[in-house]
Image (cartoon, rainbow, N blue to C red):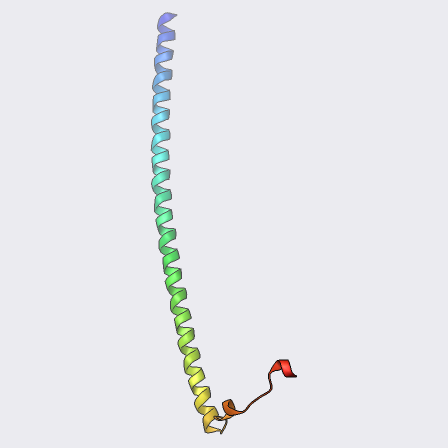
Length: 93
């Protein structure tokens, strides 16, 4: 009976040690995967920020070109001197 009890205790201790080892391996694996995903998210956010900045820059450049075209077309049509007129402000209306 004592030999059986000792064998069961030894087996139980071995299984608990193996279980603990497997838990540690899984936690380490999950930690590495989490770190990889966090790095990937940071890279993606940086890429999206760069893309957004480039789009905004492109839109400002486009707006500037369109304003220049509008100004030159307005001047060509004789509306270039509108800035010199004294229009009443909204408050006076």
